[in-house]
Image (cartoon, rainbow over all chains, first blue to last red; front, side, top):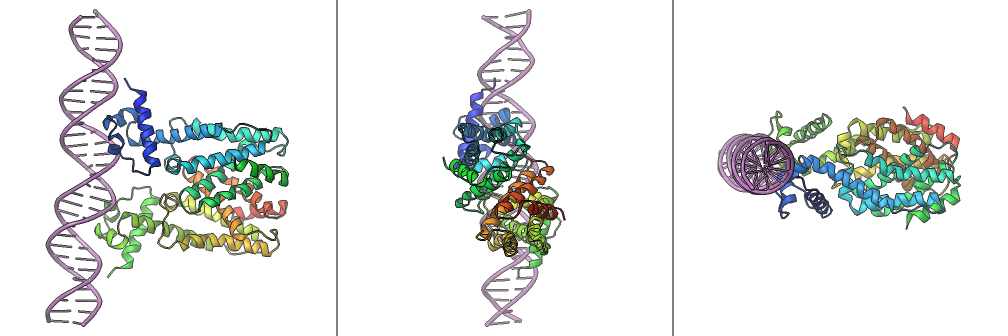
Length: 198
Length: 198
DNA sequence: CCTCATAACATAGCAGTGTTATGTATTGTG
DNA sequence: CACAATACATAACACTGCTATGTTATGAGG
């Protein structure tokens, strides 16, 4: 009988090794765990399956992180807070973040990626309902555009080209996007700045 | 004496194999070229050096692509054209683009990455000089922000999560950014749309 | 309770990887 | 022309993911 505990153990250990910047190889992964190399094949059907499971784990953790942002009376501030949480998560475990968007973007459950995006979609809908955005803005479109900004920021900082200070660009970028959606510039700026730092 | 032709030959062949989505391994790289595996070590000091050279090559090609955008009388349109060229280059050779921003972002000549960014910086300066942007906008800051948008777009489309149609988001994103820099919304939109498709 | 097919396990081996050590040839130089 | 230095070729090494082959444990049916 497949023991789910072994599965979690391997995923956790792989994530731990990834965070420690140690190479995650078949043998180094199972070393010290008591399980043999074959476990990776019975549970993940090989290393590729392990990486797929790692991507899934990454989205699960991201969703958990985004779920901690509870709606306030300022929906635009909440949107900025979601963006800040996204970046915080990405830079806390940059190697896992890189694996998530690695070549061969495949997930066991593709809906997991959509779920995380839906946090943003719901945020946009709340802002629209509160009259902050112009009528007619497509929540999915605006959420996707916000995602692009967040991913560009996270990717450039996590992979090295830009220093961590560059994260501050998130404020003017998100402000520009939300203003283009109809929010009042001054008020938008204040909301984004408030949400950006928790 | 080191023969520079061998160096170019290996880089070109590696780029070709990368574009053909064939695994670039030490032995498969030199197979058929007449040179032996040791050449990779005398010219690149190992595979890591080869990847570093590939990154450099990627930036060289990108700079060549951006250089084809000659300034017109509409600097905002030119900025959008630079963005479109950036994305066009990234999606034409997605694997090379991925290598460029791979983990361990190291270049033989780090100035190469700055040079490509300078195309955007100069574009912003021209737009400012033409009175399209508010006085006081930092060209490097705005160029960096435009880069973030372009990279987020390119990365999400190149690695799989978003379909190529998502590239259309570049127009509203860049428009929002340039409007936030002071350009008039309607005029800006027209300029960006003109530059986005060559 | 016993039987036995099925699934999970451990071990050993294979083809492939990047790298390095060693010997050979070629090249540039005093 | 002699010789040191350098580029090259070959072979071996440690490692990778993976698979074939036993071996053990588990659970269902009579």
